[in-house]
Length: 515
Image (cartoon, rainbow, N blue to C red):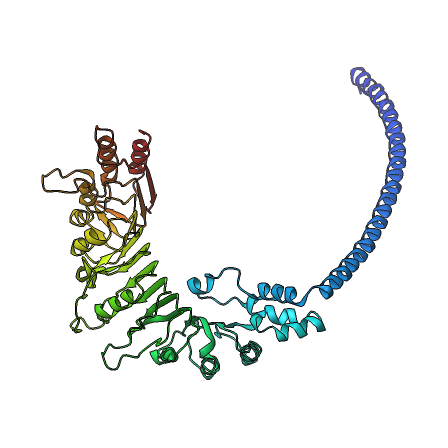
């Protein structure tokens, strides 16, 4: 090894010794720090264990105190309930067992099984509550039978036993009956047993909803029970899963609801069951919602006349006839009738009978008008002009609307909201609303002169990229600011439409900002 290499090796050794010395000092310092940290960690662990133990002790004490407090509260409540006057406790039971929303059964037709179970729950609390519950007929009056689809025989028997028990304990009290079987695809002996059980108490029915199973084994005869007198009946809702039609015949059509002096709301869905025997004492009906396929317009008119003084909401759905060549003998209305309280009118496929009623219906308080289906508006123009001048909200549904249809709406000068739903409007429809017809003999220069809001839901424009709605907003805005303006400006537009051109939506926003 040369002298130079030896010198370099010696230098490295000296440097390495110096580095080892420094590392040894650092190792000693870290070992001391480790000892101190371990001591601190052991102290912190002891402190954590002490805190955890103290916390557990506090929580255990709290649990004991809370449990004791709950026992005391139960004892206080039990003592208070024992001392509560029976009449007040009975009122509490009735409030618990009755529906919170009286309209839910009629509008939705669905079973509320919590409400159905309420009297059984109340009667299971104590011996005293059971005695009171068994004596309180009013809490057992909700008679609900849900769908049996997919349920086993044990479940069906349990439900049948519950119905039988409720009917027995309800005594002679009026009943709210709901049979919600529209999801069932069979009509078995169990279904028939339910109907037969309920039919035994028909004279006590007060509010009734029947939604029959979805099978062709069920016929309209299931509704024959309504041919009997039900003096307590206030509400009826009947629904079939498909269009169930009772053939019309003057002599053989069933005489449904022969007694209806207390009837307030009557609704049928896809089943053309109506009452056709006049009953002059009927004055309480406020809501009539019926399907009138293959029925003479005069029968429907007779129903309206019977309750003209009290009707608030009227929905008439005239579905397409089963036989297009069916001819039903009919007679026009004998005289005009005023409906002083009618506020809402919905008509489906209105061309069937509204033309024949033009000039016969006076509805001074009508606010909401909804026209569904493909009936041409121009066919009912005379009816609209004679009877619907007070309408403030107009909804057009499931049709195609052209400029000629818009002209039919000219006389509706009180309409403030126009709603188009699930259909198509041609550019000519909006164009007709954009211009005034100032001819001398025209009483209504602007179509729907008071229009302030337009709403589109699921509709398409023809053509798709049309800016007709933008032009309508602009034309009305410009006309509204002129002296002696006879037209309102459109100040709000709602569009809920798939594939609606984004540039049109932006232009609508810009137009509305001009106010």
